Length: 219
Image 1: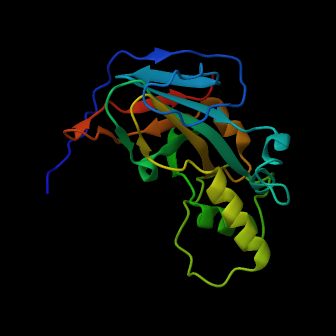
Image 2 (image 1 turned 30 degrees about the vertical axis):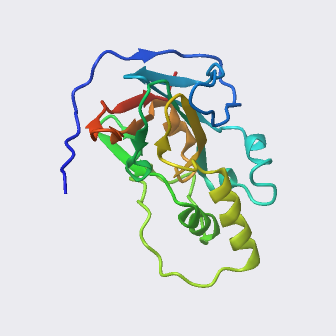
C-alpha cells in the first residue's frame, strides 16, 4: 500500500472576511459556473477554498432540526463548504477535521466533529454544564455501547445525517457543503478564538497531499 505523506508547511493563503451569511451553494458539476462564496471565514490555496460559518443563532437550526435543536444542548453546527476550482478531484478526510479552542492562555484543545449518532447521544444525555463552574477541559466524546433508539432519537439522527457534509470527495469544478457538529458544552464564547483545522487533503490522482487549512473563526 502506498504511503501518503502530509505537507505541514504553510504556504501563502488568502483569507477574506465577509459579512456573515448562510451558504446557498449546491454541488455543481465539472464545467459549470460556480456561484460566488459568501461566508464569515474563508481560506483558499492550491485550487481549493474552504469556508466555515458557525451557527450561533437558534433560529438557524429550525429548518434542519424542527423539533429538537443541537444548539439547545450546547452543540454548535458549523456550515462548511469545500469548493474545488482545480481540474482534479480532492479527497478530504472529514474524520480528521478538528475545532481548535483556547480554554485559557495556556490551554488549547482540539475537538473532533460528532457523527450523527454521537450528536444524538450528546443531545439526549442527562444533565448539563454548570454555568457557574470554573472552565475546564471539554471532555472528548467516548464510545458509548449501542442500544436501541426510540422514534425521536432515530428521527434526530436522520436529520443530523441529512444535514451533514455528504461526502469527502470534491469533484473538479464543484462544491460540496453541509454541517459539522462540535460539542462546546455551552461554552459558545470559545468561538471567538477558535480555528477550524483541516489537516488531510489529497489530490486523488497521484495521491499528492495539499497543504492543511487553519481557518480563523474569530473574524
